[in-house]
Length: 153
Image (cartoon, helix red, strand yellow):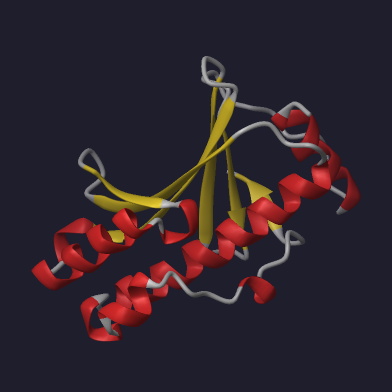
């Protein structure tokens, strides 16, 4: 199923009008007034990249960077971390292929939101201080993040 069509099905279910991608084909949504997620299509790969800013990269300590690198190498539940040098922000991103249905997309968005929120909190608290073992496991509870409160940015 095409990404924008699946996303618009979800929007219609929760009472929003159709979402319009920007000139690059991307859509950015704000969830729960604090998690801004960009959905960036890559037509050459038939994929969509989800990405979310987690915090200021200038605030990272060496231990924080090591934990994020280890989590990326361990898979972090399929996500990876990067630094956006233009914005000086740490981002989490994940690549998704085609979606079987809007329900499958909704599940993926909810899981990504839970993961992004978890890492955003840990980054704010100091990733290394949270304990490398716990953080590297990528454990998070996505149950509190349901696709019911978002607006297009």
